[in-house]
Length: 364
Image 1 (tube, one colour):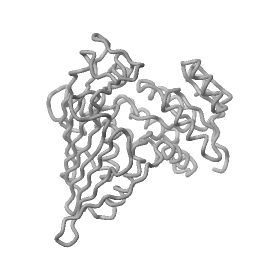
Image 2 (cartoon, one colour):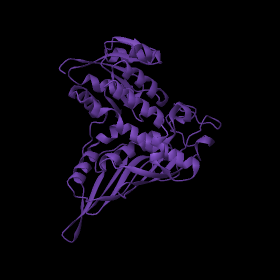
Image 3 (cartoon, helix red, strand yellow):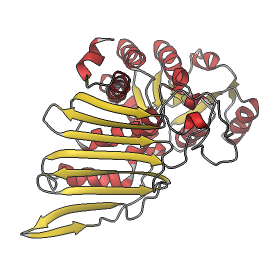
Image 4 (cartoon, helix red, strand yellow):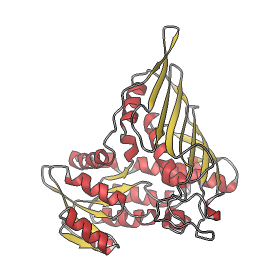
């Protein structure tokens, strides 16, 4: 466990960059290979991070026998093939969210991790926020009592990642803002609530802006035009029931006419207290409120928050899991559960009825 862990990173976008940067900060970890299709970007990152082995094909990176772990930072449709190939060749895998496009793919990834006795984790970086960590402490201390109703959202007014890109193709991404942004909020809620068993889901999805060439992020890199490929939602809403009788609600949008920029948050209602988190444009200061009583007097607490370390914490946790040797405890089950819930939401929206989570699990 004291030996250097040798890592390869597949993907050259934001995620690939932050994974690489995080690994470089951990003693005893060496990034030795990088793969991606954009040749200029590949050479630039290779030079910036002093990575000696550069590949245009991910298959060539995964085939290396001297790697201990692989980060999968590709578009969603490649998560399963890259991760499974890496796991089958004896490598641990850290995969960007979502774990996969659907339950079948995610289950295959978990099965490969268990079969090969390797770590499989999903990169849920927003769980590592300081306000989430503080809120978790309040919940675990009993300040909120039993939480019976929780709701979360991630809403953008104009934030479609790019018409005609893989993000807006159901085949390539698995869905729209629900699987892109909503899965982060879903993970926060599941983490805070102690991984409740979701029993049923009722959801609706809408595509009111993307098909008209509207609602695209104004980055200068994206084109706005009617007729671009867009067969996913730009707004999703979901109502979920848990095994212990609690309710969880979720909203996610890329485009909506409302007072949002790029904002997310949550509300928790408990028998002894409540909580509210409001985050605008990824801010971290003064985002959290705790509501409780002191005697018979209502009290509002505004904890001092910190930024958190995001992907750095995710990557460090991954390395710690590898070094722990208890690999079966880190076989991707959390990521699988999120994918199952998201798939149930999409199925509910498509069929216009409530969906049992058990039916999703049984169909694999």
